[in-house]
Image (cartoon, rainbow, N blue to C red; front, side):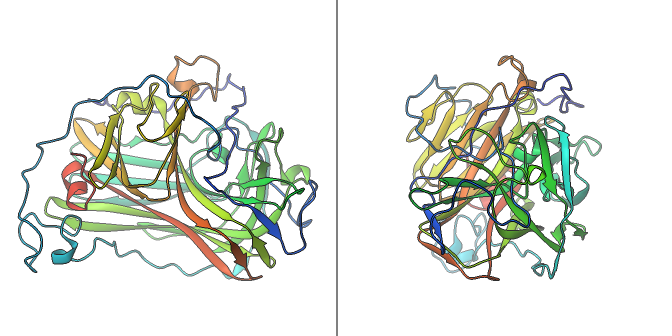
Length: 443
């Protein structure tokens, strides 16, 4: 059972930089600008660059050998009796949009559609301590049946997510934040993308969400939010500066006038309730928009969403992971300790998986299992980092767990100057029965 009052520890004395590089997806971005290969110097001279997320975007490089499996935990089977078969044309008792879409329709939440920004701003924060946490300065809240959730963004650092909290409503004053916000310019909850320059050019260029930490401190571009209860959206475009070049030592920073800029970006978080036979579940959509600064032509352009989790909270709340594709079901895995995953390429608890219908992450909050489910058809990288913030791998406060899902893989990719595109992911929050109603069963 999760103990009341557990939170994140701040380690002011730990300044060791992490070493996880952002990587490329399978057949990831091979890109070339219209003018041919880039050199390794500055790109757009107006607002170049980003830092390398030392614990930033996912690495999907060669990680081939398996490590000790965490082993299966207790099963969730038997929590609910099987319901009627689908196909009657009526949405009968125990049939849901998840289990019987032919009878009950789809489970698509009704998200508010925030307009794209019309203004542009450049406000740059430099020299923010490398391991300092980001702050959830803009927040959105939703309450469901038995569970609630709050998400928060930092407007100083690209709108990176700095909070994703869960609550067992039987304990109304006890919120549990599952995110790891330290060095949040390369952690937290954010969207990153990769392009691959032409042969002889710069290589695979990695971009975080208008923020970075690949140099000795964090940097980020500020944005302006509108907060509307369960929604937060940016009202201004901000520069998307590169974070680092994959496999190349050192990072970029606009504070140092290094790196590349091809796009401007804007974050949009929307919340919606989703009705189930077991009461209202919740859904958060994290959508990131991109506006091209120039005509672009790449062999590939890929985007992923990073979900960095507190290892301390994960252990205290018995975090377990499930991966499901049709009748193939893997888990539960206790990913706060060494693990390996069937079908994945794993080395030292860094695993790159094929696509699945969905993943479910489950925390026990004051005796109630609360899950976060998301479709992961594009594949994932799931990594246990043990020494990101300090050097003792046995100390949970020294590391984090990062879960990355690929949401866009454009091959080839061409974007006209001024065009707007997006990358988005929906995160469903609910009890295990509510999530099963929506098609995300853990048994």
